[in-house]
Length: 351
Figure 1 (cartoon, rainbow, N blue to C red):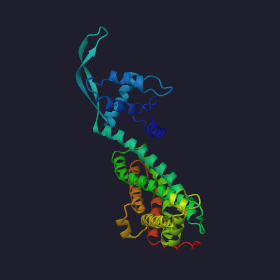
Figure 2: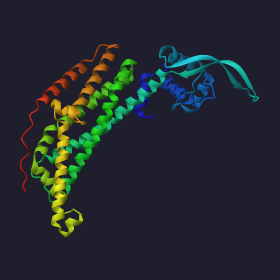
Figure 3: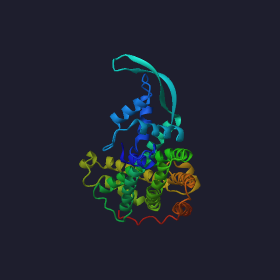
Figure 4: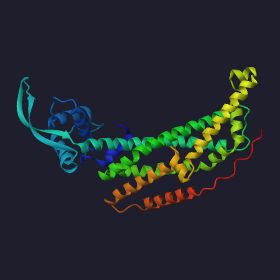
C-alpha cells in the first residue's frame, strides 16, 4: 500500500476501530475483489479468515469476530458502503461433507466501489502534482538560464538546454491536462460524499503544493514571450546545434549547403516552439480560447476545486480563513496577468 494512501486511511479510520484502523478499507477491498470470483459466499467467517490471512498490518493482532461485526455495522448502517442479506449457504464440515445453513452474506454497494475509486484518485492527483513540481522547477531554471544575454553558441550546450526546456514544458503540460481532467470530478465526488480526510488532504495539497508551483510557472510568461520575440535568440540556438562538438556529418565535412539548410530548419523549429510556449501564458481571451495548453484554465479548475472543497468543509466547521485569503489572492493574480505588460525583448546577442 502506498504510504500516502495508508496515511489517508489511518486518518479516516473507516471502520471506526481503535485497534484495526485499516480494517474498513481492507474489508471493502475484499468485498470488491472477491465478489467477482463468484461461487463462494462472503460471510462473516470468510471475511475474518481472509483479513487475518492476507491483510494484517505489522504488529496488528488478529481481527476477532465481534470486532469485525461492529466494523461491518459501521460500513453498512452508517456509511452505506456495504449491504447484508440473509441467505442459505453451503458450509463444508470437518468430515468433508457439506451442510446448508442460514447465514448473512455481505456485498459492496456502488457507493463502496466509488469510495475505493475516489481514495485512489486522491493519491494519483497528489502524485501528479508532486511529479509536476519537479518538472516545473527544472523548466523555470532552464528559462532563467536561457534568458541570460550573451549566451555562447560555440558548443551544442545552448541547443541542448533549449531542447531540455521544451521537454520539461511538454511533461508539465501533460501532467496539467491529467490534473485538469481529474480534478473537477474528484472534487465533486469528495464534496458530495463528504470525503472527510481525503477532501481535507486534496484541499491542502492544492493550496500548499499546486498553487505555489503553478504560480511559479505562470511567472515565466514574460521571459518566454521575450524569447519568442527575439529573432537573435532563435538564430543563436540554431547556430548552437552546429557547435564545435556537433557530430553531424555535414558539419564534419564542412558541407555548407546542408549546414545552411539544417540551420534554417532548426531556427524555424525554435521559433515554432517558442510561439507555442508563449501562447500558453497569453492572458487574452482569444489566446485562452484557442490554446490547448493555456495555464489559466487549469488555475480556474484548481480554484473551483478549492472553493467546492471549502464548502464541504463548512459542513464540519467554519471555513478556514487562509482558504478565503488564498482564493482572493489567486483571483487578484489572474486579474493582474490579464493586464500583464510583456517587457522588451532580451538584449541582442552578438552574431
